[in-house]
Length: 154
Image (cartoon, rainbow, N blue to C red):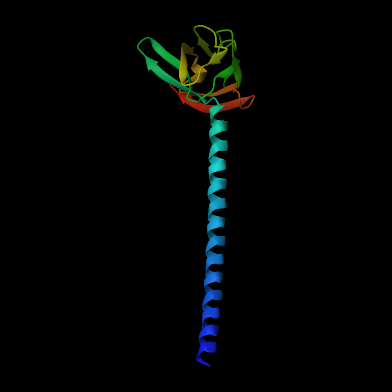
C-alpha cells in the first residue's frame, strides 16, 4: 500500500517537474526570439546608417565676415547638393533675388564626403537679418532628395 502511495507521489512530482521545465524552456525561447529580433533591428539600422549622409548647415562668424558651413556627419557621401535660403535656390555662386538675398564666394560642391565639411564666405542682405531659413537637399546611397531645414541666425 505504501509503495503505491509513493509511486503516485513520484508520478505527481515528475509531472510537476516536466511542466516547470516546459514552461521555463518556453519562456527562454520567447526571450531568445526577442533578443534575435532586437539584434536584427540593430543590424538593419547599422546598414541603413552606413548608407546615409547626414548634412546640416551652420553659420559661423569669422575674422573677415560670416561663413556658411555644410557639414556631413554621416557615413556616406552626399551628392547633388541643393541649398535654398528663404525658399529661393542658392546656385552658381550667388543667391539672386534682385536687391535681397545671400551671396557666396564660389559655387556649391557637387558632393560632400563622409565626416567632412565645406565652407563659403557669405554676404547677407538686410532681409536675412537677424535670421533666415535654410534648406539643404541632397542624394545619398540610402535615398534621393533627403533634406535638412533650419533657421540660422547672424
